[in-house]
Length: 390
Image (cartoon, rainbow, N blue to C red; front, side, top):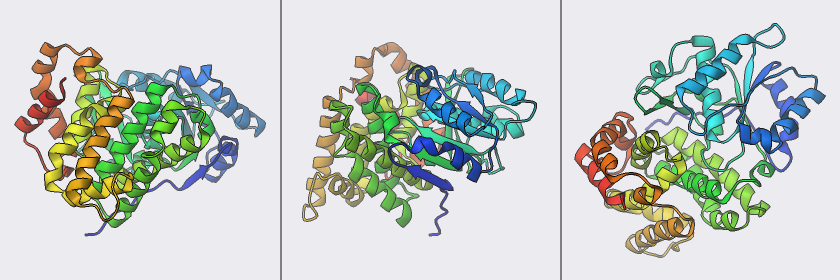
């Protein structure tokens, strides 16, 4: 099998790496960036840090600071209006995304809509969006989505509550800054949700039917970094060593799934987020133990490798022992990190029951379930939604 690999052109990593933003913009040919961020980044002073470095370098910039936590096309359109207005009489020539996956996903959407127009629904899968877009420099402040290293963006269509999966070269950032200092302020809930999201990326990339030797190594490295450090960062947010390990692990996970694709967990997770406004990482966490257990019979060695990389079993352990350890760990992790079931999140049972067929339909339409080792039917997806309910 021939694997096609896509990566950011430049990645700067390490404490204080944000200070290199001006140099990075120059290397990417960007002189008038539009910053895409959210109110929390403003409140924490991170935007001031970023713009201070730009001002010191004499770089003109614009600012959109109203990114939504789970971006919809409505918020993207608001940002698009600022992008179209230009900077000091000239067009913006690049985007700097500062924040979690939502800010980065918004910037990726603008990178395509700015030069090419249309609606986000015009770009959702199965279309592959490979047209050149505006360059994006991604600065993640959470260790989860890996969006700084993926050719994927997810934007919700407010007209039907569909989380639209969009893919292609146009959505790959040209550069990323991984500065663990920007993750020290993350609350426990966000640390947990984004961390399990990153772990899900790594596991699904490794067991994906589209996996390659390259993505395998990225996925296994991600698991080795994330598994022993997620609890540490959750219980002690100032643990810099754990924070940096999670940030790099999340990037490895992003590289892995961007080149191997995600699978059933993500396919079933997106509709939960769209219809019930569950944060993406949290909906992944709700699903991960049950779907992993259901999928193991189709790829027992692959899942056992995951357990070994996470430090749950040694190389001499049998696949059966390793897979039991993996399921037990995923359940224990959810319990320790306070991951609720859908009923615990406050979702009404009647509404859940009513939407299961549509959620299953949207999951299958995304294409992600087809990458799973065990490919489900719509009825099997509905049964899995029943299992994780509560």
